[in-house]
Amino acid sequence: MSKDFLAQPNGLKYFDQLRRFFESSLVRHAAAYATPSQIKELEDALELNGKAIENDSQFRKTDIYFHRVIASIPGNPIFLAVHQALVDWLIDARPDRVNTAELNKRSYDDHVAIFECIKNGDVEGADAQLMAHIDYVFDKYYG
Image 1 (cartoon, rainbow, N blue to C red):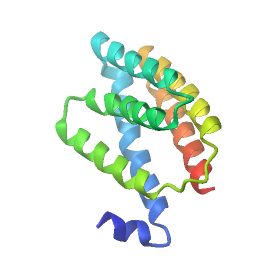
Image 2: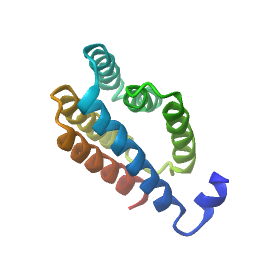
Image 3: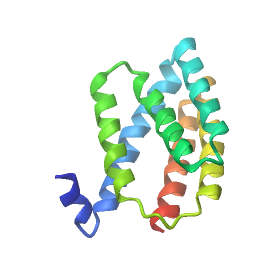
Image 4: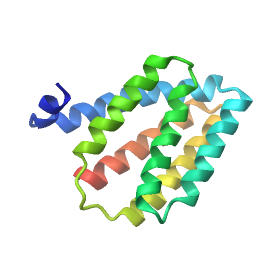
């Protein structure tokens, strides 16, 4: 079903919109309710992400892991399943023509900003940083 949607003229935009709605709720929840141990787990994921900037395949894994930790914060296993499905669908649809060195550095910087907002309980800031991140990544791949 996802491949059928992605093949439609606006399929990528539909999935981008789904990602925006879904991850917005997750990051807002994280900023409002993350426990100190969850913030530490997210910080550890961020550290791994920063160490992988120059290794594209490792960066992709740590990028996904950073977002997965955010998806785990509400404690709902359905959110993790939806997150994994979104990752699978969107990664499969991405073209290979992107300058990954630039993308990885900017994505990491975005992740730092998102993390700081979550850590500081800044719900609006976390959402705004996430939206800027999603917009940037979408534009790099499809703009």
